[in-house]
Each structure stands twice: as structure tokens, then as C-alpha cells.
Length: 448
Ligand SMILES: Nc1ncnc2c1ncn2[C@@H]1O[C@H](COP(=O)(O)OP(=O)(O)OP(=O)(O)O)[C@@H](O)[C@H]1O
Ligand SMILES: [Mg+2]
Image (tube, rainbow, N blue to C red):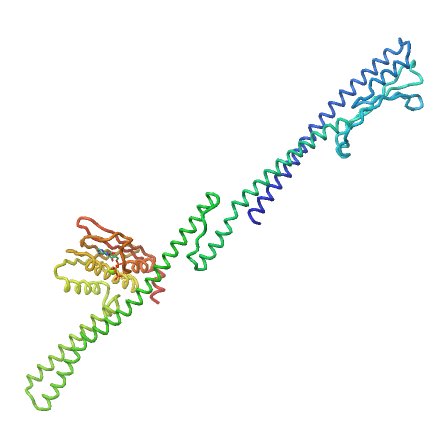
């Protein structure tokens, strides 16, 4: 059931309960009132008749006294006096005041007093009247109570209806924006992250709307980042292919050419019966060229597979990486310390990539004198840290471009790890830190 429906049902239930309770309390009070009022009226009438009976023996005009007593009760609201003869016939009776409006019959039945008739024997002087009858008639009292009770109940009902109506109106208005919010959630969930909802309604709903808008903005930003990352990756792949072609052409091609030339000259020398020393020299040149070509191929392979070099472990690969950086930047002091750990191929490859990104960033964006690389092992994780003293960030975070760190964070967090990049001081520089679980299920899945 909707919230509105529940509220309406609850209010209706409360209203019925209040009315039933009000009616029950009113009934108990009315019973007491009827009992007290009619008891008092009966008492007055019985007293009057008793006094008359006592006075009759000395009366000079018995029938006039009886008629006078009966007439004093004419118009009484609760009691009627009847004078009865020996045959049970009514000889004289007072007239009851007729009630203006009558209470419902069920109420008259419910509130009627237990005893309604009192019979008093008359003195023989009253003959032919033998008895006086005092009859209490509750209709007037009950009608009076009914009109008060009906008014009370009507006021109670009116109050309950107005309260419930206003309550439902307020809730209905407060809940109306929830429709817009739920359809916004639906649209955002199906990918339309540009969806926004108007911030209106009660403070609670407005807060919710602001939260939805902030979430949509964040999702939109993430989708934009992902798009840019994908574009960057595809551009990088193109660039890498072009660079590979250049490397093969410039660094491997000349050695193959030299091998070709030297091999041809060896053939010529052998055919012409040349000096063995010269043949040996040419053969040595071929060996050297082939060796250089192998080194270049290995270097290119290292770039193509940024992870572990084929046949090498984590320590050797990082050694190789640092050695290459040292040879290009002899003025910089590179310090490498790696625990001999075996966190599995996926984590190892990621550490190598991260260290390469950290070292490249230090060289590209700063002017470091020292770069330290530390890979350490804890009980259930492997951590890596690359720290430089190149001067720190040159631009505030929002203005930095590039995707190296962003991609690295995604990779590390994708394997269930933590990644952070922060500025360090004295001397100023940047420290890149990551922590990876030694072998996670996700890493194993990724490796398969
Ligand atoms: N060691 C560092 N010293 C100074 N600034 C740094 C350092 N590392 C990162 N930065 C700053 O942070 C930015 C983001 O680095 P990030 O590696 O993500 O991108 P990039 O190196 O510019 O490009 P690429 O996508 O090729 O890695 C850099 O552009 C640079 O301004
Ligand atoms: Mg970078």
C-alpha cells in the first residue's frame, strides 16, 4: 500500500477509535446523569404524595387536595402522577411535558432506569382512589442528553475530519516531488546522467533532490573521464604502433643491413680464398651486429610489454628499468630497493607499470636530483612507492592534465588495492604510493 494510503487508513482508524471511545464515555456519563436526575425527580414526587396521604385524614376537601397535588405535576419533565381506583382505572393524572425532539429509540432503551414506577396506597378517605402511582419518564432527560452528546460527537467528528483532511493534503503535497525523483533515478540508472531534478518542496525532499543532482553530476563526470580515457588509450595505441615502426626501422634495420653486408663479404672472401683473419673479423662483426639487434629487440619488447620482461622476475625487471633511466639521466641518483617477493604475475606487472609511470612523471614534470623506488612486502599486501625531489606539482589538481595517474588508480583499485599521489616537502617533490593485495581472486581471474 502506498504511504498516502497507509496514512489515510491510519487516520480513518484513529478517527473511528476516537468516536467509539467518545461515544462510550458519553454513554457512561449519560447513564449516571439519567439515574441521578430521575431518582431526584421520583424522590420529590414520592415525598409530595406521601405528604398528601398524611394530610388527607384531616382534609376538609379530599378530592380538591388530590386534584391540586396532581395539577402541580402538570408540565413536569420527568414524573407523571396517576390516581388509580380499585378497578385499576386511572381517575386522575398529571400531564408530562412533551419532549421537543426525541433521542433515537435504541438510546432510550439503553439509558432507561431500572425502576420506573412507584405505587403508594392512599388513605380510605381518598376513595374511590386506592393508590397513587409515581411514574418516571426518562424521554425528556434522554432527549436533552442526546442533543448534547450529538453536538459533542459532531464537533469531534468535524475536528477529526478537518485534521485528517489537512494532514493528508500536506502529505500529498510533500510526496508529490517523489514521483519526479523516482523517475530521475530511473533515467540516471538507464544511463541518462544529464538528468537533473528541480530542488523544491519540503527541506527533506529538497535535500534529496540536491543529493540526486550531485550524484548525477558525479556520474556524468565519471562518464566523461572514461570517454576521454578511452580516446587517450586509442591515441596512445596508434602512437605506440608508429613508434614501434620507427624503432624497428631505425634501431634494428641498420644492424640487419650490417649483418647482410658482412655475410655477403664473408661469402666473397671464402669464394676468393681470402685471409682467414679477415674472414674471422667479418664473422665477429656479424656476431656483434646480431648482438646489438638482439639488445634492441629486447628493448623494444620491454616497451611493448610494460610488465615483466620475458624470462625476468620483478626484481630484475625493475633493475632493468632503473638502469635504462640511469643511462639516459646520469646526473640523477636513482635508488631502488625491492623485497624479494612473489605476488603473482598480474600484481607484478602492475607494479612495474606504476613504477615506470612514477619515474617517467618525475623525469617529465620535475627536475629531481634523487628518485627512490621502494617495493615492500607485508603479511598480505605488496606496496610500492616512487618518491622524487623534483619540486612538486606545478599546477593545482583541477588544472592537471594527463591520464597516467588516473589509469593507474583505476588499475590498482580494480585489483582491490589503494592508490595515492601526494606532494612531499623538504625537499619538495611528489610521492606515488600503492598497496596491492598479494594475490586477489580478481587478480587470478584477470590472469586467467
Ligand atoms: N612527479 C611529478 N612531479 C611534478 N608534477 C607531477 C608529477 N607527477 C605528476 N605530476 C603532475 O600531474 C599531472 C598528471 O600526471 P599524469 O601522469 O596523470 O599525466 P601526464 O604525465 O601529464 O600524462 P600521461 O597521460 O602521459 O601520463 C601531470 O601532468 C603533472 O602536472
Ligand atoms: Mg604520466
